[in-house]
Image (cartoon, rainbow, N blue to C red; front, side, top):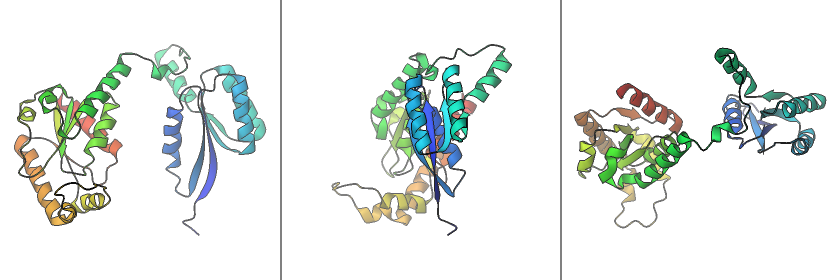
Length: 273
């Protein structure tokens, strides 16, 4: 059958957490709809004894091997053994390191896990994440002016996941639900520091997402009205007019992933700074 997927083994070997490899492997795998990777992740591989156990696993389940190992001797050992087994083996970072070295005219430090150093950027991300969690769903409105970004939108426009994604980029983000006839906090209108942006989607999309939402036994909750497309259209109309009156940019998230929405917000922030 044309739609039937095949499977292949994808071995991801890292001397650190493996996050870079997983992102790269999944980004490329997504371009091949007929094949599904069976991921085998091996983090914190830093000596030959550990690496040999990984190679034994690869020999049992051959497939594509991607790795990020900065130790050149370990990397060479892995390349040699994979060649002997007959499987493709790619050092994901090496071509990029080579370009950087050529352009900058200096050699890399070859330090394991350098991107996870406890530096100022790391602590800024932690601070942003704490701020964002504290300011989810309209909480602590008195400190909105400390935010880098404030997201407004009706229920189910991906405000919270977008906020958390931005926080992981070091952006302090607050989000506020927009409900017709419920005024937004006065502190929002007085805030001068943050970019304020509205998120919208089609009524069909929001209704679909709301139908799948588990709300529990919320007092006074009317599920029929919550997923009614006509009601949602009125909510969206109100949200759009609110943004227009205050000159807040609007992003339609109907066909956007969280990552794409966050990228659009970051681009807006760059243009308005």
